[in-house]
Image 1 (cartoon, one colour):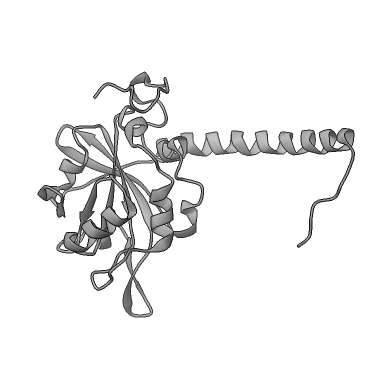
Image 2 (cartoon, helix red, strand yellow; image 1 turned 180 degrees about the vertical axis):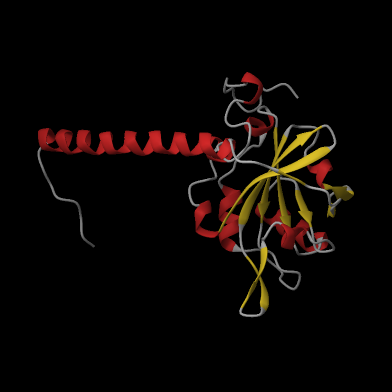
Length: 214
């Protein structure tokens, strides 16, 4: 294994300062990109998708939990499989409590093709509390391009889709797939994908996750 060069403290500080300037330029570009993403046009979702979750049948509107925004994780879990995709599982592992998202008027849910009877034991095994739904009896996966045709056969891919609610009207605002999910499991990373951004309704104060009002 090749290790970094060994230098003195002053040379390290100079190299670190040069890198810091590059990091700040990247952060400014990332903030500008997030602002441009928030200005994307949106598409109204006219199909009433019926999914299956812990409380039985659920519509896409139900997944909002009366919040303004919804982030859906397209979790790869085929109907014939006993366990889900390890990469998708690693993504969920890093999320932690959803209280910070929910306090910012944003719901989160995972959606997979596998029947809920297979999702439930795997969810218990992983120790997750995140809402998880089966879309196996709807066109949800195809319509939001989590299932695509590759070499003449359907194939799943991991992704995130963001939705905005205006009353009972639902709008699709953004989606991202495959390797572009890298680094998106943080609170700010997820909120930067949404139409309302990091501080919807002026909510910008972080708290301990058990101190938010429910």
